[in-house]
Image (cartoon, rainbow, N blue to C red; front, side, top):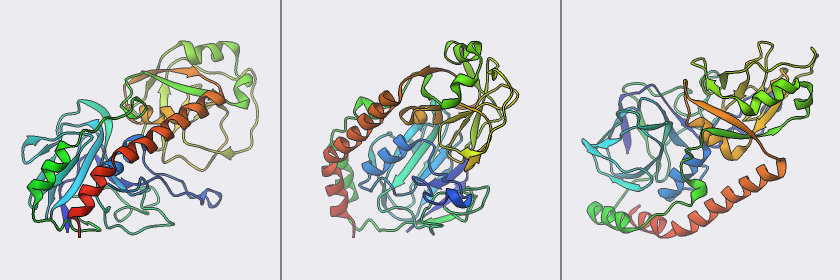
Length: 332
């Protein structure tokens, strides 16, 4: 029960919801960049949302499956094909032995996610299957996939009637709530920090009135932005503080950095604000050269948006109960 990596792609690594509880020891949380796409992929194949998925960046891998399984692809549209035929996103798909999954041209987004029913056979590190490549821990041997890797599956698909299962799953209508669909907004809603008032009025205005471009020097640790210079009213010394996913730091050069999934645990740069968690998936699907604007909202608005998304996932999980039942019936 496995899949073989024929081509690794640009960067494909296993990620879950993160390595929580170790930041006081200097261990980064890491985890998926796009939590929305990751959770959706797992729900579509009948998994709990904390099961590890394969995060695929820009140029996808080529994979050969040695045994039947059920997968789902979500997030970026990287033109996936199965045995040369276009493959649908956001649906459970039955895979047969010797099927080959290939990714092609990027149509939309930056990161695709592949989940498999029952999950991949990985060894946890500090309670998580997330890959942190700088520390070489978690996921598959602490690194991105390489040609020739053979990744095992936790559970076999025992059914002899694969065509019947495929037809059953295809006949189920799946409607995604608007809160869980891909966002086409070129904006990131943010909450201001306590240090917001330490920046010049001109910088405060520029933050939301002008456009920022994601620098080529951006990756899973953080997005460096190119745009108007953001300045403090006067120099100040700061103690290092805990860093979170979405923290907007401003180094001395005045070009903000949005901390992402592989962020450090602490940081001493001034922080002008925090990207609302509901819009972090939108940023995760952007890449170098993409542009966006910030929009300031209140903490209460950010919390309400997060609650709305959580409620939408709960409702979707209930609606997908028939999918889970069909899949489980065909597994050993």
